[in-house]
Image (cartoon, rainbow, N blue to C red):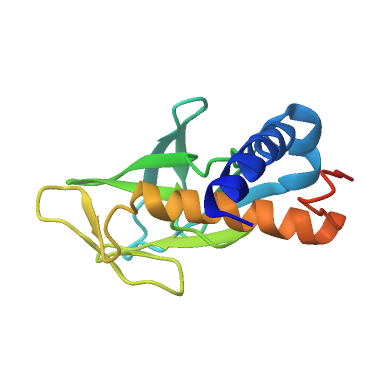
Length: 171
């Protein structure tokens, strides 16, 4: 079988699978809800004021008491472009941080602790930047990595459904 035949045969099938997975009915099966919980880990009894939003949702401004937390839930979009950024404030300090980045995160239950020195997720080290924002130790993830995750999903879906490209059968 020639390379051009495989590409022209698989391309329409792959596009069909992408459309099926991206549809709202497939979205229920493919995407579980993601939960983010953020704890106030500030010293000296400082109150944490937080404002989080994405391009679609605005969680609003919340005041979190010392040792307290707030949480929110959402569904990650198929193309892993979901991004929630938050502004964190306490007396004399303001920081901004991407609390959830679908390409960076690997959790359905995500836990963060905000401290004076850094936001902590228990796995990756992040630091507050000098200019009252944050520089993640993992820089922005490229489009290639996003596409890689999309194709991983397609492949796992194909395996789960017993998809056979040569038979053009979808489950």
